[in-house]
Length: 127
Image (cartoon, rainbow, N blue to C red):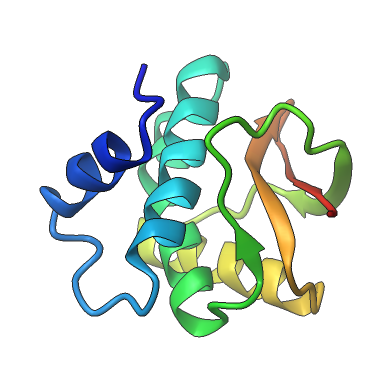
């Protein structure tokens, strides 16, 4: 598991996803948190495909919404995002982004979006 911030940043920069991101360190931490969440969940293949692009899109649209953490285990606030959307990956991703943005959060520690029993949840924490 990657624990060093520089290693996390390097691994995500190599994907090309951080190109044009205003805060590469923060985005890399958020994306790595979602990667780790996906590895621990019993979720659908589609959720695994769309969760990271959804978080990337949320962070690009609202860079102030999440603060990334190396260890997000203390993120105990949970927001219900509803039933997992159905459809093509791009449409599902867009719907997840809209649901997260509608919460109108700011400065939250990012604990990942979680798939459980057909429903989606957002885990966050506060300072």
